[in-house]
Image (cartoon, rainbow, N blue to C red; front, side):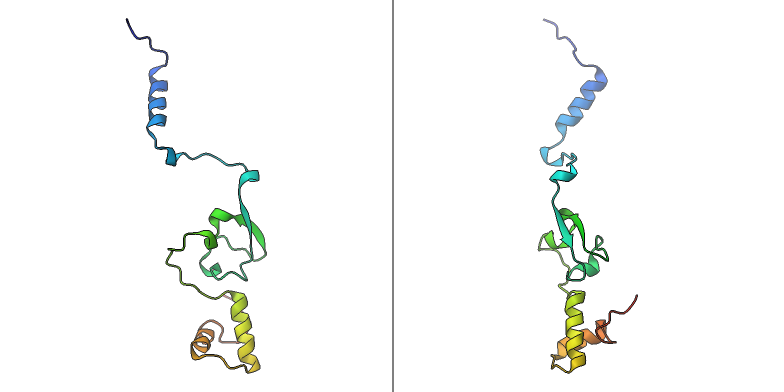
Length: 119
């Protein structure tokens, strides 16, 4: 018995291309109501220096774009947040004893006191 062609040649090619892709490569769009968001407080985040999504005010960003939720195997150095640096610089200016490494860090990042330098 002869086989009948149900699909055209272009449809057959498109179907075979679709079926040849592995399941993990499926893209797809997720609606905004089903995406997970987190409120970004870049002033408090220790990864804000290397973040491309940070904003000057608290704002919602996608969890998958937040550096805090990436795998722990990333080579980002763990740094202090701007808030932590402000607290340490305030302690230094008030005369609280700090360690030598802390003072070196403050001399490098906040040499003029607790005020963040304008870049």
